[in-house]
Image 1 (spheres, rainbow, N blue to C red):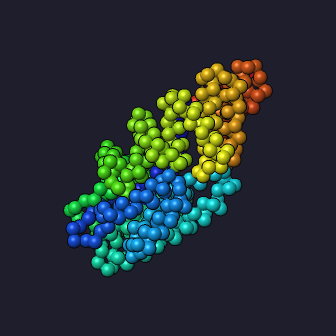
Image 2: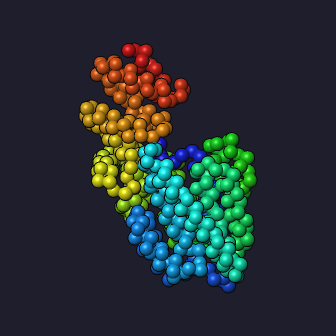
Image 3: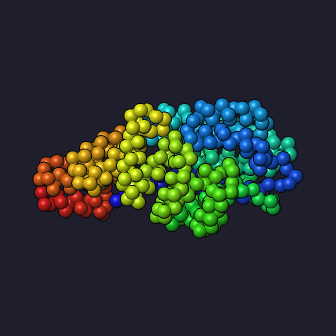
Length: 399
């Protein structure tokens, strides 16, 4: 069984920029901050829940109403940007040939909305509401940095990140903390250490920031997941990723199940939950959810694209193999490879593993021609010191 929790390597750099979204921000009693205003939180709840449940059109209507109600404050505009961010994440599962134009339009819209948030934030900042102004300037620049870093526009991303840091320095000295800051503090503390350990080449970049603390980072994210309003779901989502990467599968599965049950139309949460069912060998539930993913894709439900089906077919292949249903396993692995072919990166771990398992199955069946085909595909798409590459070469020697 292999672990390929979905997140590209370089995306973790973006968490440094995202950590500017909430870290160190504080609330002053004499400010006009609306971040802790219970009435506004109640008004925003329905829109935020619809956004996370991928009911974007309904959420958009609610956000537009908030924009009219609080047109001189950046909060509703920023939430519209957050909604666009989740759309970008959802569409990332599209095949390459369908994805680029769609994502380019969403990227442009997202950056435009964040620029609007920056403009409004500067206005309230100059007019005396420095707490909310600086907070949302940091937030907007932080999210811009996150997207730009994921698009590998490093210079622009760095500029956005340092702009965020500039405004955070102004508000980190306030004494009355708001719960939202735990999210950003947690991201920074965890990922600044994680990146240094995982990618030594990036240490010069990380040295530009204060030292982190992984344990403290997780505790801060747990605090945000329990106590914050605007960042609760974001914190829970990152904890699923972190727990998965740390092999704390019990906590990861518990949280992913909660997120999926709370937002059942969120395909990303569905994908996380299904993958963790696979990793914890809960094959009965994994089979059920994998079939649902394929059914949602076939019914063209929003958010379910080729990448989701690629993964679902792979899980089913492993499950059928464990049930000794070899023909069904072969079909599932082949289906997974077919969907994987829609992407430029044919070295995805599940694809390498599918090729190896198919090569092994055909070898055991005595179909050496088919076995060679799939085993050679492993050699083409994996490094020589990769375990599956080694196993494939050993089998090929026997043919």
